[in-house]
Length: 83
Image (cartoon, helix red, strand yellow):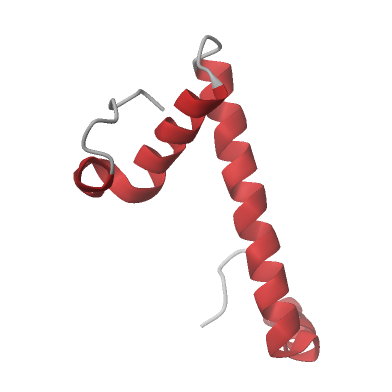
């Protein structure tokens, strides 16, 4: 199944590029993308909550990543800060 916003030829070229990366390259790419998304999310939290400390930004990020129920199980004393 290819994306609706991509031609079949473009989608196949993208898949071939991923294949050429190999398993290690794909893992490296996925880790880099994950790091980038976390940094973008942190930047959004800081923009919406300029008074947050770095620790509060990290707590708000964890809330976004894990959801309230899991966050409260892992950090029962942690405040539910607005992301």
